[in-house]
Structure formats: structure tokens, C-alpha cells
Image (cartoon, rainbow, N blue to C red; front, side, top):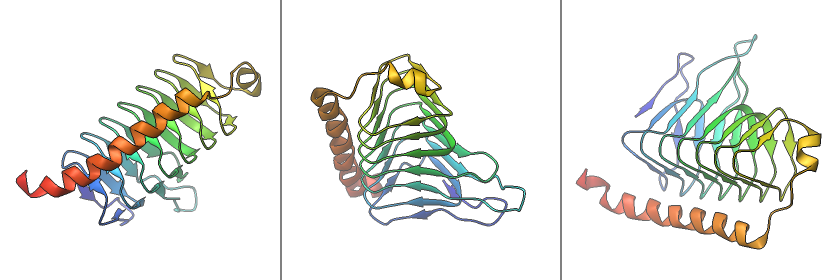
Length: 186
């Protein structure tokens, strides 16, 4: 469902993107080309700052927002999801937040008030809050990262982990094509 927010903003969805009919997109959202937005995802840009303004939620080209993901912004803050990035099932990305290109965010992970650099991997059930994750970091499953000291204890992404992330992104680009081809069958 595509709908306006109370400020009157309506999502802008590129014609090559696929948004599952059960997903909800509300407000100041930009969905770029070949994006896959899965079943029951909720992307909502509707809160304003003290001046009545808000930044958009931007989903970069070739990215995928999988089943049950929630993306929201507090007090007018924005969320930017980079290109070819995967946000896996039931994750939460709460702005203000910026996620780089070619990033993988694992199942049930939570990002809040943070930046995740290009090529990073945040594995399943992890929390990243209030810090800046440099490019190329690998955050293991169930990690709780909230400071530079936490980041200093984390190893760099290995090529096999990056390969997995790239394969997930590519699989979801193919899903966009497939679902768009059969969309009139729903």
C-alpha cells in the first residue's frame, strides 16, 4: 500500500521497483530502480522536526528490503539505504541512519542513530546504535555495538562473507524481474 503521510508527502517509487502488495510505504520515501520490497515490510516517513520539516527515506538502486522489515525516522531524521544493499527479514532500521552501498544487514538486526559504511556486514540478531561503522566491517551475529571501543574489537569483512552479501543482493534483483513479470496474476 502506497499512502500519504499527514504532511502530504507521497512515496516516489521507480517504475522498475517491485513493492509487494502487503508492504506499506507511507510518506516522504524515494525508492530507486530495481529495488525489491518484500511482504509485510513497513517503510514510514511521517514524523517532523521542531520546524515541521523531515528528511526522506531513500532506498538505493538494486537494494532489497525483505519480509517484515521496518524502516522509520524519528523527529524528521532521514534514512538512507545505499545501492545493492540487503536488509534481511524482520530487521529494523530507525533513523536518523545511513547504510552504505553493498551492505548486508542480517535477520532481526536493529540499526538506530548510526552509520554503516560501504561493504560492511551486520550479521543476524545484532544491534548497532549511536556509532559509525567504517567501511568493510564484519559485525558477528548477536553483537551489540555502541562505541568506538566495541568497533575496535571487531574483525574486518572476509571475502567469503562479502560474496554471500553480493549473492543475496543479486538474488533479489532477479526477484524484482520475476515478480514484475507475474504481477497481474495476483
